[in-house]
Image (cartoon, rainbow, N blue to C red; front, side):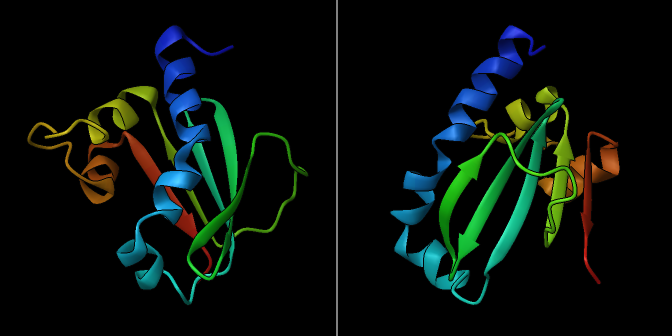
Length: 109
């Protein structure tokens, strides 16, 4: 069960597609990316289906062995820190959070 903080983070994440898809520069940078991305906020998984850099769908329910290009797992604390307008030192990006042990990134070689 989600804690109140995790619940709010998951609700925020569920609405990420319109924000990403409205950013022409971000979509252009990801234009060669098509596939699935698993993002876990605390214990809650989200499957993003990407098509040519756009988020086509965000799903909370999907097959157990869903194929994916990349998995990003992080604690609610890590996501909260990352999404601050100005993250604190040591919390500014996925690589720093991985080094801190707050996130894990796994992908296909």
